[in-house]
Length: 612
Image 1 (tube, rainbow, N blue to C red):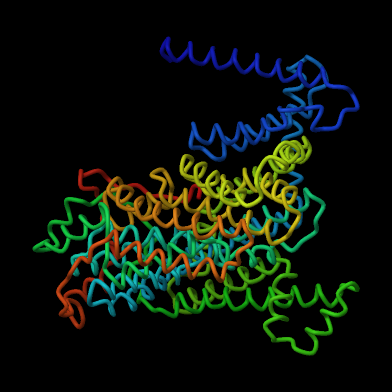
Image 2 (cartoon, rainbow, N blue to C red):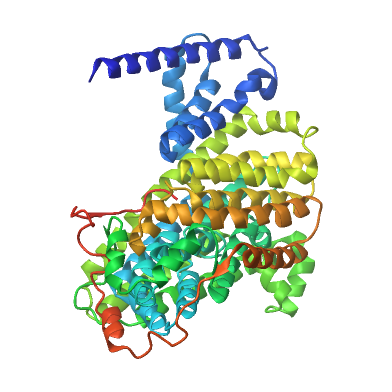
């Protein structure tokens, strides 16, 4: 280590020791029987604040959450000025805290269902089902307009995971877009805009476990026992950015209007003489999950396992909620309605709202996993050992999600123990105008997510603070739901346009687009939709205007703004792709989806799922 490095390490160590001493002194000066928020005072904000600041600086969500939890446990463990004793006790307490979160039945179910869905994604990819399904739709694209719409449809179909979206849709549609002279930047935007925004609002995805869990924990902190899944369903209409960015993609594709750097990229692409020119913009490649060599591609290898997951999840959701309502003596009236009309819209919604999502999704994912393994063996694509091995490999890509979940639950628990939410509520409930809170939450969530490149971490940090604050400012469930949606969709907006986000990077790689070019062209569109989200979504919602008025108005304004700001990028009206045997052959034989080297000649390296 250099002298400079040694000095830096020593300074950090000294600063940390001094900080721990100061914390110990402040806590010990508080009256013995003081309430939590009075005992810790401003220090109650320290654990989440440290997690946020470190996430800004290090871009490492796991490290930031870990240190945030440890500092919280240190504060709880302080009994005197002996920081060494407090340090050891805090470390031991943190271990117990994490284990207790893992031991919780709900938490264990959430982690297990995330792992199983990761296994299913891997099986579907190795059997060639995902690629076959994407190719079947891609063949129908014979104009830029059709190709862009089909790309969005593919993104909507791969709703269960944002990483799977980037790794499946981008590589499959790239040769089609190149032939049609659509820019790599536009393709990267289409893929990125239908990744996290779709997975974040899908009722069956690798995201839902975290979202429901954070909602549940947030309401428990204010003494409310609610259905996390039911609240999640109610937030969907208020997830303005998710909804509007998907509609913007469709409007842009149908009108072919573009503005900003994207317009220049599209105009340049239309003037291209041949596809050789696109090689110059190819970014670093990666080895994604490819179909097993020699396998015959079949769409049924995707439709059956994923269909099983979706249908069995819906049945499991309904049955879980149905039995819960029937067994609840306080819900006799609702039970009567469901008995008389079991498949009415009201009955279905109430059953889904009362369901135990962790159990239902685990049951569905387990059944889909069994179906996928049996299909792989029955078609002799893989042996039983190989199929189970690939299933386990898929789970490995989701392990980081489990780590983030455990640390997020632990941080929420220690925040509750310190009375952080109570302190924050006491300060802010009489100073923040009610109507502005949803907007402020959306903006704060977006800033943190953009700076850290992770929506999971942002949700984990802000949700335990948002629910108590929103309830204190306005103890109305509909208002709290709007604020919750502000956290969830703000995190996705920031993650969507962040240059250090995993999904942004994978979208660049999957489409072989220069990463900086992707960020530079996409951010104009993201900010445009975010501005409309605030002005015509969260501000009106703060005044109590319902979503079914806000969203149509926002769509109209978004369309008019695109026509005023943008310019149509023309193309040859004659179909370029149809029964073109060259293109069809390229799509069928595109097994080496991305290639083996970068444009600099570097060997590509595998990418595994890290953080969202």
